[in-house]
Length: 421
Figure 1 (cartoon, helix red, strand yellow):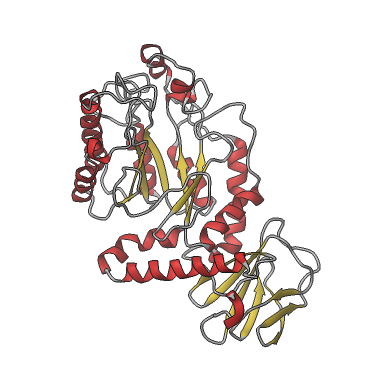
Figure 2: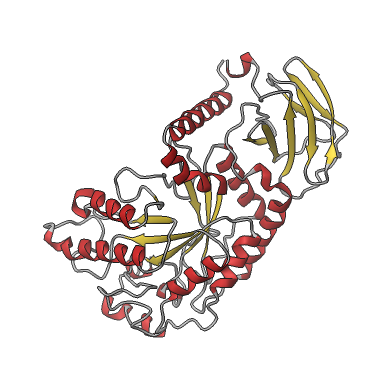
């Protein structure tokens, strides 16, 4: 019988090899994406006037709040504890290598200065350009900057409820606004590294003139990386709240709890172990992990998120080599956890610690050394054909989350020929 798991690993590894081969065909493409492939881990930030009622970012739609009522929140939104330098510092402490912020969500409220909208942080309660402050904080810390931009804007007539569509003229003003605001975002803040679209609603790239929109973005920012949510060819895919490998660059985005925007009583936080498992799962399949935080209306990130990010950061200081620049490994230990490959080094990310001996099967290369990164301990290696045993390791796991073993080989790592049969 075919081992489905092994076949899946083989297929992912093959896709990743093809992807990297395609990338290498173009030096321009390689230069364009290399830093992002190396980064593997970024911070997503959902923040806006919806943080005041603290019911999540879809409150205007889900509670059917008329715009004339909803827009009054903007006069109250004046975050006194907004310090984006602290956000950047936290991201760095967590081991994150880039940040993506919601410049404008579906409700239409802009955290930036827009000439084509009055529903902005500059023209309402805050009285300042909150994105400009974020950009400066990122730039001061040499942190790559991503701009999330929702194409849809719920305050335009005829847009809600979703799923309705009248004549295209209903949407023409909204489309014009989207083009104008993307131009503003990519003109007024210096170099921007990522453009992260969302909510192509209706899902018609021709209506949105998405190809034209991306061409403008690349003209204004030649090195920018663009996601796939404008419905046309893009630099990377964006599975949401799931890890789904693709045959192109991809990034899984996840919320820390069950809400993207600040929700005061959403206590359903993922554990540190689960967040690290997701990070490892993305890296092991050649993808990035974009993890969301949701500041409150005053600009503070909740302590539950802060504590988790700091725990992840401590783990990354010891084990980050298994994540940054990583891709699928041809040598696997599927009964124990996940595996990544960086160059000719393989990392075993063990979710289930087997005790003082770690077994590996279907290994086609000679293992020359094995190091438990949590304490630097060298394992004694026994190898018979394609079976490997790593002896003299601790009987109990050293790291409380994922223990990582770094494997070196006599040459490039490879599976034995029966590995996927």
